[in-house]
Image (tube, rainbow, N blue to C red; front, side, top):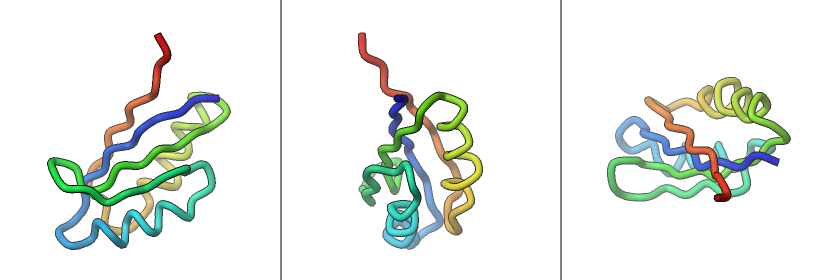
Length: 77
């Protein structure tokens, strides 16, 4: 299982709607609108890195109102 935080920048005024839409996507375990340099922070999981990439590119980035994403895989050291 691969888990990651996905940091998202949105169009002005779209953070709450983006977080709500993303929270409905299978594989997303949490989506919160926040303040700071990013507007939404998402926690997601997938079976492997390839599936995580597909989740981000094919589903999350397709949500209307997103301008940029940064995916940060979780590592256990």
